[in-house]
Length: 161
Image (cartoon, rainbow, N blue to C red; front, top):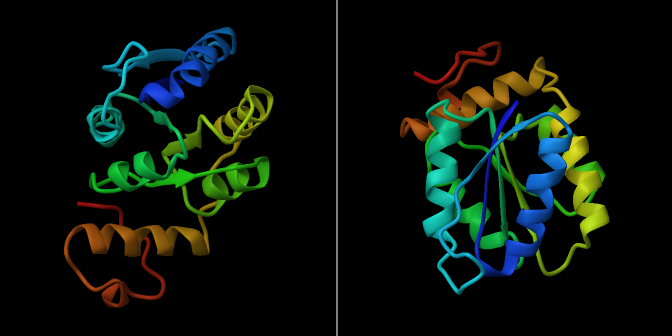
């Protein structure tokens, strides 16, 4: 799997650690970081990772900042992105199975490297369930098109245009 990864200065240590973990797991890793450990603004990293995922240049993305909140907010502004802020393996599992999250956002300050490893491995191995959840993803695509999600038919699973 091709994984785009990026961090601001507060997520640098975790990003470098994850780059190696992902490579050992056989993933292709593309790094989008502008900081080299120096202070930077998280939207400057969230945007290129989000674009790579939305445009299909990467299969999934991982973003890390101090809390993960800023990265999540910025990433979710890009159409086609479903970024999930996750703090444990349960959240990693559900974000994939139910929400088809394509970007994982993590806290570099509040999570240790071991739990980050477990979260990332769970998230990468978990598939989207589809079914009733696909309808909900269709409603998210409707919002991205500026439509009322209530206008999506109950049985519809139409993909984004």
